[in-house]
Image 1: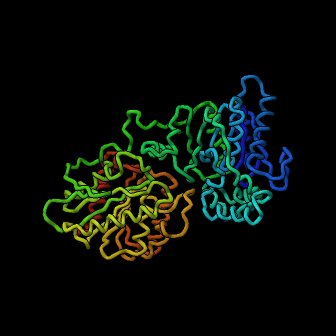
Image 2: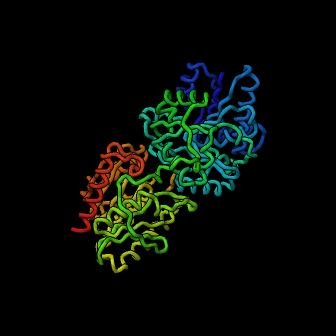
Image 3: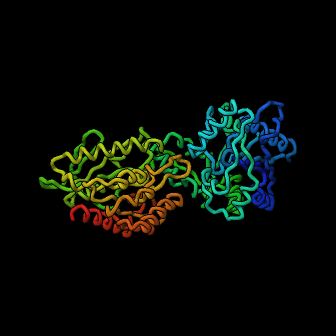
Amino acid sequence: MTVFILVAGVFTGPQVWRETAARLTAEGAGVRTVALTGPGSRPADGGGAVDLETHIADVTEVIDSVVGAARPGAEIVLVGHDYGIHPVLGAADRRPRSIARIVHLDAGMPQDGVPALAAVPDPLLREEAVERAAAGGGAAGGELPPPAREEWSRWGSTAGLSDAALDGLTALAAPQPLGTLLQPLRLTGAVAAVPSTGVLCTANGPGVEMLQVMVDVGTPAVRALADARVTFFELSTGHWPMLSCPGELAEALIEAAAGGGRLLTPAGSGRTPAHLRPFLLDVPERPRERTRNTDLYPPDGPGPHPAVVFVHGGPVPAEARPTPRDWPTLTGYARHVAGQGVVGVTLDHRLHAVTDYGRAAEDVADAVERVRADPRVDADRVALWFFSGGGPMTARWLADPPGWLRCVAANYPILAPLPGWGLTGSRFHPARVLSRAGRLPVVLVRAGRESAEIAATVEEFVAEAARCGANLEIVDVPEGRHGFETLDPVDGAREAVHRAVGAVLARLKG
């Protein structure tokens, strides 16, 4: 028999699990929901403050009670949602032999010595917690009030929640003791031996394919996930699947307990990573010129020629090899436009983390000025073409288009900060500045099989373009995935590339 121990996240308690627990019980599983000690309660050890160690003790107590009452052969699966993964890992680290599997339910990968506050997506919320703690003389006894009904999205996507569910979530929410967010998690390392499963809510964060890309490019934080003991499931919903799709969640948990789920392939396993597969067009090789972080693919003839600067996405780890300017998609586009009388430019910028957008945009701006200074380049006819996670940088040029910028293009772009990134304001939120772009041509290449979280940012951008009358042309790739140029070498995708390149070059040469 499997016994699921369910631990809820910030502001929530056992009541959020009601429907999911009922589905699990109907499948013959045992279920225990943990009532974490809240504000106004006293820790079981008699201490004066409720902190993370208090909640770890709460979970450990339930584990011990299940072990004491369990039949031989019973397996315990610990499920932590949101903040709940912190006390789950702390308790499992103390009772590793009692736990068959840990499920990270739309939760991160907390590390030893790091407080839960570091995982809170909104920087203003983090600041509020620190300020409240300071005003109260420390975390002891302090608390963070639950969000109002319209503020839940600051803590995670509310996609899939009905009005009734959101009302119920708000009505039952309780303050969160500050000590639970501010006290660092302490792990001995014993928990690393316990198999784990990630249940990814794709309206709130990356799916399995995006994690695989991160493994392939060498993102340090996800390398350990490419392990035979780590499996994954996806739910196409927001951050509270126990309320938005309890049946689907219960099914995923049952399968996870049985060892099911998708696996990630380790980097260096002999498989060619998706981003390093051949470009979908058979483009002839052309000479390139490398200067600092920039490569030029000049066309035939003396010029001056228009130029297209191709800006890669990310974040990409600084250690990634080859670096993005040598990836087949960017080199393929650069050679393709060079064959049509336009200078193709690829570059490496320093978008190594979501906090790096400012310096990455400066890297792009610096590269553009060096390209424009080349005598073979027509300094007044330049296009910028962004990919994937480079999309937020378009806001810089949309907000105040320079005279030399003839077109902005974007392939399967992220066009608003994703949940969990913590980016606020309009600096890297293209839809918020699109109305200032005037008649600047924008070419958007939209992948039909895009992840829900990224597709939502594109929909926001398209809706704003319609509202403000932006000069937007959309090239759809109905069967294309994120990174279709190396993933989907089919006729429809090839046609879309030709259409997009034609649209951009028409703006440059017109």
